[in-house]
Image 1: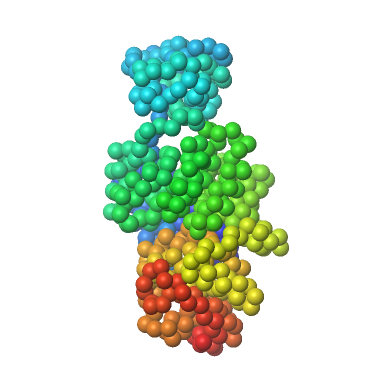
Image 2: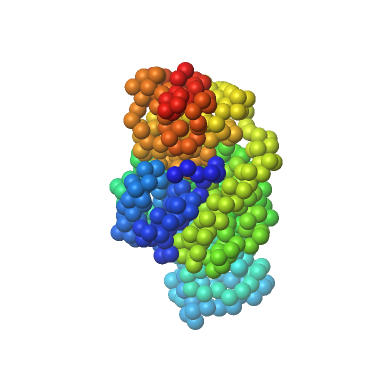
Length: 478
């Protein structure tokens, strides 16, 4: 099944989209990979969803990626004696280590690490930023704050600390159990929540030991100043705009989205734009004009993937949401100005053989107006390098490794085919043409460009480029 767009669609599964028939419909509508949110999914259900996705994958013969999203630490207030209180602007409100139910003057904060790290002047955002406090006096036992933006506060509401660097791991005991359960099922990507520093990613990678790729979610203000290190440590990036917009002024989020997209592309790492992209489609069969424009912006920026959250997991119109994203992606990429925008954002190639080959292949393919750029890749790295260049022709990645194929489901422009490894260069060139011909990328008499690593089958050796003509049966000849 060939997509008519380069950007990928990541759809979250949930109560509205967990049976075989619905997952099949979502794939047919345009979903390239699926997200399982461990905040709401027990292990048994996660295993069932993975098995169902693999069933769909088998029936279509095309790799489908699975991303498991770990919950991360959840910082919450304690409870109130009356269940809720009203906080007034200007009043004093204390957060402390006393487990007694709270009132309008104080409440228990069951996180000693917060009390230890808070300093006067630090902000505390409660209930997704609806209530804002400023710390005035801090100790390891309590924090006296001033209410800057008041409102109703009830039991167990969330706490966000945009100014405080918390000395806590991004992995809770629940996350570690969820991670091990997910790895046993053979998922492809792990999304890591609450990332504050590169060490959080490194810690997760030590546990994963190469069994899945790691996608760092950028949702904490503390991560912004360390983005370069986090991107270097990660395999991919997710711009989690919802939580990021709680800890930072909302007006900063669009520019940060652009910066992160370009930084990730420069590093050759996939980047996913997430949260509230088609939020109104949870209840409505059509999105707002502003939402369409928001999704289109991510496509113009050259993001690798765009994500649906509650729209596909719990909304009334999950298939329509995926279909809408698919149409937006196709329409933007047909826009005559799209290529000029993508080209203007192209980073210079890195000074490596692989990047030099990928850049040269892109230039040759566009100069000769070739219909496809074909990559033979063992680990997937060749296809990722070529995708970094955002070439005009589609990228056909051929790999003998199903794991690599599934991970490539999130990468811009890559149509992946799992096939037996090439025996030699003649076999590699011949079957490259046959596969591209079979899947509708080329016609007899056209030429294609082929990128690979020699010796064959050794990861990370992208060092060869060939131009070949496609014969009447699809076979390619140098």
